[in-house]
Image 1 (cartoon, rainbow, N blue to C red):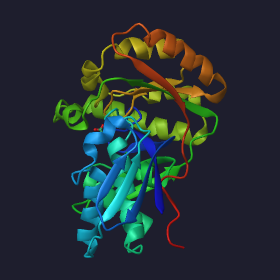
Image 2: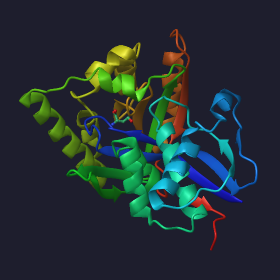
Image 3: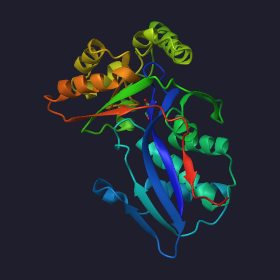
Length: 302
Ligand code: HSE
């Protein structure tokens, strides 16, 4: 039985819109095998409506076979989803990457990891969730030219950092969250974001975390998407007043992520849990860390 394990991802990380992302230690797993009869089982009751041939993983496997010019076998697929759906933690990217890795194994590995990452970017349209889901760690990713060729660098965030992740009980579709963004930005906003994204990467690489609070500030997406997330400004303020090194919207939201030192993670999580308890929406607080492995194939052919 072939099993694929794919990490959750956070994208943008403040100012790095569509180019910075990081894998987190929260995973979806799928098992897949050739079968005479088509079947999809989804372990979580909330996913039952996705147990059809329209299933994203199934569609991605089908697309893979088309692109490599091979005939797709009938499949039995099981999904065990721990990444909350449509919350800004890369659940659809995890499906895309899981589907591509599974298909590649089933088809006898016609593509290498870089080619799978490239195909994942083509399907997703932007690289900042799929690239860290493939490679693990924090990824700086650029799609270049008409071919949208992926150029990336992986860095390993320090084990001393924790990511206190605040997940609300409502969903926010990436398509909707992209539609509300402006078509153009002022020179001042461009300078604001380029400088902070650069400072963020350098701070993560050098361990100079005093800069993180400034480095995660953003003028490209958070000010616009913030209106879709009730109480976001109050939560940001409370996190910073409670010892967070910085706080940003995860991907297109609505999840928010506060950066903490590992030694203070429980204190910060407790304070944030107490703070969000009285809001109308229910917020789940998870303490996550960077995943450095990315997607893993377990039990494939040797
Ligand atoms: N960079 C993407 C966005 C991530 O913010 O729209 C969400 O998939």
